[in-house]
Amino acid sequence: MRGLRLIETRRARQLRREATSAEKIVWSRLRNRSLGGFKFIRQEPIGPVITDFICRERRLIVEIDGETHSSAEEIASDARRAAFLNAKGYRIIRFTNQAVYENAEAVADAILRALDEVSA
Image 1 (cartoon, rainbow, N blue to C red):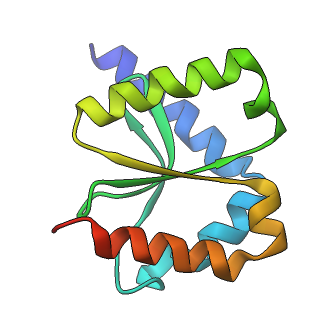
Image 2: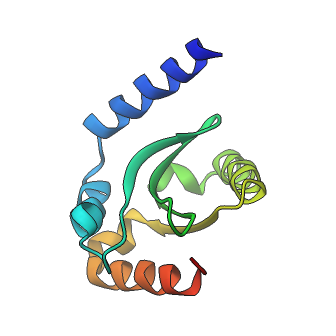
C-alpha cells in the first residue's frame, strides 16, 4: 500500500511543477488563505484521484478543465472521478481554462460563494 501512495505523491509533485497557466492564475487567488481565509492545497491525492485544488475544511474541490475535458472519454472519466469524490463526501466545482482567462475574478467569487454554501 505504501508504494501506491508514493506513486500518487510523485505524480502530484510533478503536476505542481507543471501547472497550466490557468491553474497558476487560480492558485494565485487561493494560496496563503487569500480567498476568505480558507486554506487550499493544490494537486492533492485522494485515493486514485489527484484534485487540482482542495479546501479540506469545507471539503470543496476546485477543478480547472482544459480542452481535453470536452471529449466523450474525458467527460466519462470526469463523471467517474466525481462519483468517487462525492461518495467520499466532497463537493466539486469546475471551471474551464477559458473562464479563468476571461474573468479570474468571477471564478474566485464563484469559489468563495461555493465555500460559503458548504457547511463547516
